[in-house]
Image 1 (cartoon, rainbow, N blue to C red):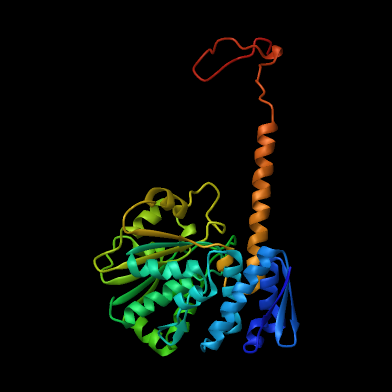
Image 2 (tube, rainbow, N blue to C red):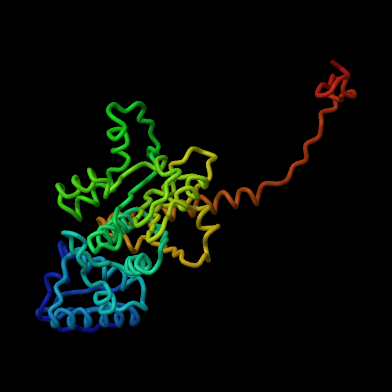
Length: 353
């Protein structure tokens, strides 16, 4: 099936840098797009072609109404609408209107990001769970900064476990703060994106913004605060319970983590996984799950995450097949090692020894 869609405005942003936006449309819907003078020709199976036509018509209408798409935003929107047929480009764009978060203007770039922001506004405890690059921490910090600037809370508490990513860094020189700062750098990066560096430093000096490792949270009651616990997959169930019970009056808490990147020692149970099992269904708690479609980093990151997921699924399937195919074997004592009754508790002597 072949159709043509007239396009007179916004052709540059539609194609994007090195045609990356139009490639998302082609790959996601299984169609081929070709530019023909003042129109775009779409060729492929009927369902994919009709879906592409709907998306392009909505794009043309939005551009004619004055909507300006940046290359990264449109790429994110197209990944969502090509992956989920129930989502329209217009609704996605309108629901994700830009909002001021300090010096930064941001808009959710996927349905799950929109749900995440709305869940933080409605609930006092929100879990954001998903792969790297989905904006879990960044949006949580943005919401925290917004809450402080609008005087809904009086301080921000940012914490995460001080766990290395599979490495042993050994002794770190400097003061206690200098030792723990490398572990907390992602939280600082998001803060400096939202606020001027001087303002961040002043707020930290006054303890309005506190960035601390998880171990410093025990025994505290955090009233009138916005609390963010990052990298929650690297805490134990005991640590998770300890942090969740720090929440005081007029406080919000956001817990973020990626269950595919657990750096706990072998044999230690993941506190985030335990919390999902224990707290699912508890009133006032919201769980938002992200997937590779929500990744807002380089397009390659999305494909890397998907490849690792497929590889892990294949490994799990293979291990299960091997276990099912392995016959049960009974262990019988060797004839040459018949034992007498023990002479004393815990001791046995072979007859033919």
